[in-house]
Length: 563
DNA sequence: GCCGTTTTCGGCCCGACTGTTTTCAGTCG
Image (cartoon, rainbow, N blue to C red):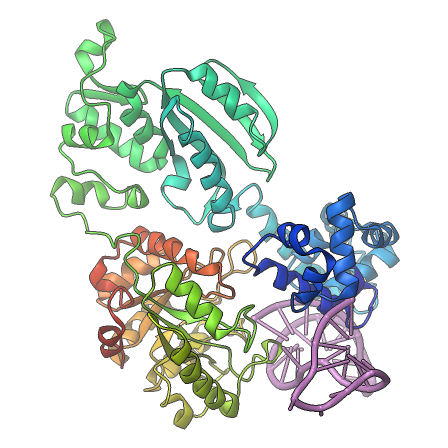
């Protein structure tokens, strides 16, 4: 990005490509260097002499001189500033050169003072847009996209669980509820030696700062910027604590009211008889597990994902909770990108990776023509890719590779690929990638028109939002659901961590309308298939059952559910 | 800085949109 600011040609793209190549490696670069040296690095496609030497320098000295000298020339928070919508490296450089702006807060001040509008290339509108962008960013501050920090959370939990003196360790809070973004990490553990657990926890390599450490509770900041809490409990109150710390707030308030009506008091230590609780400090039986607590209150156990006090307590009382779609139940993935466009891996590599995590089929859905930056496929290339897929299919067994595309829906609802070619594909997804700020009416009409095309099987990421980055475009979701029902179009839950589009309330409406869902990873590399489980979580939060989803069945059955 | 059965030098995906212009630069995907 620093190079881009200085308008160095081609190098930025080369570094970007190299970074993508490293990310999509099966092994750690360090390992590769250790075993094969410089030569092994150069063998990685996208990495040549120059970058290989820089990697070597980094492994040996933990720094790269060229990078540091660049950074000195332009001492600017580039990644922060460019995370503002509409601001790229060029503008950031100009802001630095002309106004000396290095940080987001300096930029905010300058924009508020009206200093930007006089800059060449900027105007009043760009000033407003920048301020809006900063506000959107700050709204999300302090929260983390669950999917992006999931590996780290899991590794901390796994390490705790592996300790011989820890019987159990569970995340609570928004992580257990599988919210899209999470504020901090709450861990509850059972151990007979809480002191030892505390000592271990605060000295974990992931921890950067210890706020406090007592006999059964510790509070730390992790290196990734997130705060984490650990509480060690007795087995007898674990269920109550898990329930209490899982939330959400509204669910818990309503649950406590139910407890009061039944003559109980519910808190994080247990479920107590109200009268006895004042004199007797003993726990009511049944605080060991959440199931027992809910049962005592006359309720079915409620999955954490739907604890929002939006009808789940009533349903649990009547024994009418939905049978939520199960984790690990997906058999296929309907949105997969490859290196034919903006993916990092080949068709074959993607197929093998999908097979490895237990999928039975994938649909290759590279971008089409008008998404030019990604090298979007035109009709000719699509036909060529179909031949390639047939070829790869012969080399890979145990997984079916279906043919598809992520077709752009143009401004007026037409598609950028001819119907004749689309008709040859197994699965066609339509997606909006341009004209995000049409009026709600125009945007809705545009997508509805695309659904009316008999070749469009699925609408990918139907609202276009990017969590912490971009608002959804204006669209009448009810009208989309209605049109989907009428045209038999499937709506997607895009499981990519910062998309999760549709969102939970939308999914509930889709389910109620009897429209089918697909849960796709939107994989751009072999590692992204793991995001599918995040999509399942999203579906669960939207009360979706197995029957509402199409890619939890074998591909032949799945295909029959399409138009 | 990378890459090569069109090249070891000379290429390097590009179209739409926005806001700034009055013919274009920057950003996004």
